[in-house]
Image (tube, rainbow, N blue to C red):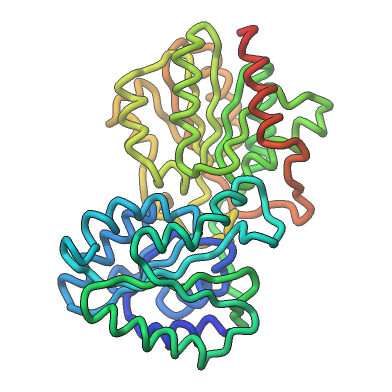
Amino acid sequence: MKAETLMEIIGSDFYTGVPDSQLKAFCDCLMDRYGIDPCHHVIAANEGNCAALAAGYHLATGKIPAVYMQNSGEGNIINPVASLLNDQVYAIPMIFVIGWRGEPGVHDEPQHIYQGKVTVKLLEDMGIPAFVIGKETSGEEAMAAMDGFRKLLAIGRDAAFVIRKGALSYDKKVIYQNAFVMKREEVIRHIVEISGEDPVVSTTGKASRELFEIRVCKGQGHQYDFLTVGSMGHASSIAMGVAVQKPETKVWCIDGDGAALMHMGALAVIGASKPKNLIHVIINNGAHETVGGMPTVAGQVDLAGAAAACGYPYAVTVESFEDLDRELLAAKNRKMLSMIVVKCGIGAREDLGRPTTTALENKEGFMEYLKWM
């Protein structure tokens, strides 16, 4: 099905969401049609944020908004769905468009397996009827489902389209880029050189994949790293949890801008606690690159300034490898919570692989290594 066909079937003029690779065609279509426009299309910080934005749109207009997300975001909408949207509370209707990662019987990465199993059940448990769209689903079938949804939407209920892998297409190619020249993989390579044998917690997506391959290229083991392959936005909190329990060990967090925005309250908690041995590096390319390159608002946000306001005693932004190396080395030698925001370009190797160890093996190796810290 064409992405624009699904948009016509939904019939909304307000979309908000967090991008997903399964929904890339849909997201590209939205970006091509609306760009980023607070009246029509907002890429929000997290999925709960999206639900609240959509609720505000409905309150102001009386019309039906649409919220898109990867199925991993269902956890973030449980609270607003149950305590804001539900027809026993405010009865605020909206359509969810959910990319089905980890669908049973379809090969996917380990962080998606369990979420894939419970995707439809979670919707059922939240009282949200769902219609699954696959490669063979016709526009007529999706329209019939939407006609049924409209009866529920009219009485303040919510509904969802669940999108299987490869179900949507979009013919136009949308290019995402920025003006920065450093590449994330090279930034991580510089971090690895200076962090040495210090433990590292890396965020979800391509950053962890690149870190894994850098260790392979250097002939190093993977015991130094905890790869946060799922749980987007929580790497910095994991790193803080490690740092406060290992106060004599320097702990590094390799974070992303989209991840940092998703649960930005972590900055306040870390800033209030001020673990002197934590170095928080946010690689900011202003994009949800792992899922297609759609923009984040981080290109317009002073993340170092936000960290300083949250209590980080040292926070800086760099745009060159010379400045990066200077700040990384200073942070390693500094006994103070530090943040380094690294402005970099969008892009990754076409042949970038995935970790060849299991998540459980990664955890066990990391924990065994920490015993000696």
